[in-house]
Image (cartoon, rainbow, N blue to C red; front, side, top):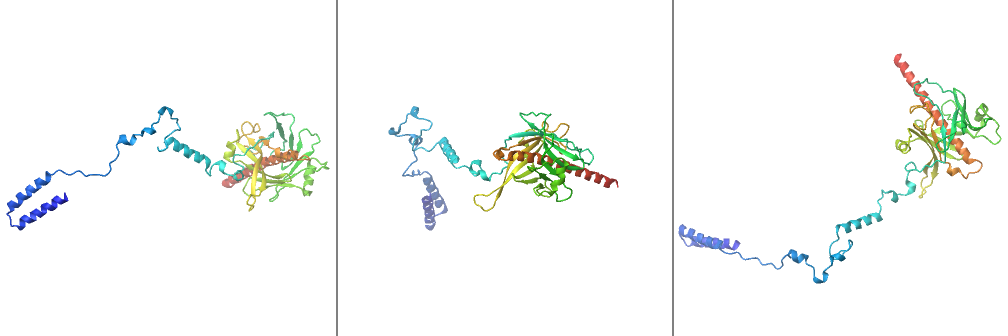
Amino acid sequence: MADSNHNFGAIILHLLSCACSPQDVLESAAKLTMSTLTETPQPVLRTSSLPSYCSATELPSSSVVNLTELSPGTRLSNSPPTYDDAAARSFSNASIRPSPNTPDSRSSDSSPSRAGECFTPTVQFQIESSGKHWLSLPRGTRPDPIPVFRVEEGRWNCSTPAYRSLRFSRSDNSCILIRGGDAAQMPVCTTLYRFGPGKPPVFRLPNENSSLHGSAVVTEICEEDSDLQIRSKSLTSRTQVLKTPCGTFRWRYASRKERAAVDGADTLLICELVQQAIPANGMKTEEKASRVAQLVRGEKTRTPGTGRTTAGSGGRLMMDLFRWTDLKNGGKDTVECLIVASCICMLKKEVDRRRMHQLMAVGAGVAIIA
C-alpha cells in the first residue's frame, strides 16, 4: 500500500510538471486508482504455522496407553500434574511442617497452667455454711458450727462429719478445726483473726505434745513463731496467698471461662500450688501454678437455704492430694486440714466484705437523709 501511494504521487507530479490540463490530470489519477484497487494482494508466507488441534493431541504410536490399565495415581510422565496430585503434595508438605501457632509446635513448658489444666480430685468434701444474705443487718453471723462431710460416690453421711469448724463468739471469727468424731475436740488446725490493718489471719498446726483445746489455743497462738499467715496478693485483690512448709498455696476466684468448664458452677474458688521454676536459659525464674483444690457452688452443690447472691455459702470442695501421698509423718493429712481451714477462711472473708458493703449502703442512706 505504501508503494502504491508513492507511485500515485509521482505520477501526479509528473503530469503537473508537463503542463497538462487539469482534466487530463484527473483522468490519469482515476485510471491509476482503479488499477490499484483491482490488484490482488499477495499472501504473506510464514516459516512456521501453529499445529492443529488434532496434531497437538495426537500421540505417537509408541505412546498408546490402554485406559483400562490406568490407576487413579497413574499419569504420563510428560503431562502436567493433575489438580489432585498438586493438592496432595501441598497437603503432605503442610503436614510435615506444622504451623507455629499449632499446639504441637509449641513447647509444653510455655503453656499456662490455667488453660487446659487437668484436675482430677482424689477426695471431695461438702461444706455446709449458711453464709450471709444481702438483706440482713451488718453484724456478725451466729457462731454456728460449720460441718464438713466427706463425699463418696456423690453422697455423704450427714450424721458424722469429717471435720467441724467451731467458733466461740459472734463478734470474733477465730475458730478451731476438729475431727468430726473427736469428743475431746482436739484441734487439727486453729485460725486466729486479729483486729487492725496489716494483721492477716494466721493458721496454727498443733504440736505433738500439745494438749490444749478450745479457746486456750486461741489465747496462746500469739506467742508462737510458727504461725502461717494468709495474706492478700494486693490491696484491691481478693486473691489470698498461704505459705506453708508443704508449699505455697494461692486461693483465687475463677474467671468466666474457668467457671464455664465446670458443670453447675455459679461460683468457683480455685486453690493452686505455686512453684518457682528455672527456665532452660536460666535467666529468670518463672512462676508455675497447678490446681490442687476447688470449691464449686451451684444449684446442686451449695448449702440448702442459700442462694447465688449469698456471701460465704458452702459448696463442694474437691482436692487433688496425689502429690502428697508418699509424704511421711502425716503430710497428706496436714495438707488436707490446711486446705479445709483456708477454704473456710475464704468464706468468712466473703462475709466480711458483705458486712462492709452493707455498712457503706447504710452510711450512704444516712448521708442522703441528713
